[in-house]
Amino acid sequence: MIKNLRGLCAHCGGAFEFRADAVGTTAPCPHCGQPTELTLPAPVCEPGLGKRTLFYLAAAVLILVLGCVAVLLLLKRAEGLSKQRTFAPLGVPGQSSPVHPGR
Ligand SMILES: [Zn+2]
Image 1 (tube, rainbow, N blue to C red):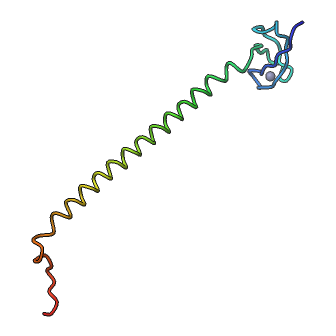
Image 2 (image 1 turned 135 degrees about the vertical axis):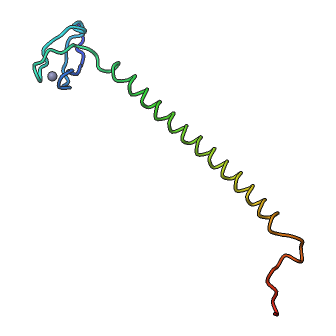
Image 3 (image 1 turned 90 degrees about the horizontal axis):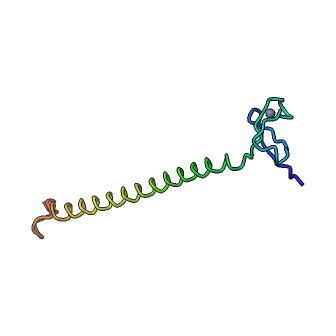
């Protein structure tokens, strides 16, 4: 008993059925009439989709890591600036205020 397999035409993309023992041969497409190779479409499509998904996943992780590093750098910089501000403008306590009320 020979199973029927489903394939896609390389020219018009139309689906058609063919006998399993005809895999690898060429036959005219029932939709467009062009000679098309009788192959299984599944193994051809899957690796491309997986690679593309991996690429987008890697790009997303890279963006996430870069964002985290940028936030950490900004936090460290802000911390340094706030330390400089607390030390620099305040002189000796008691003489710090330049505005004297009552004059
Ligand atoms: Zn076709």
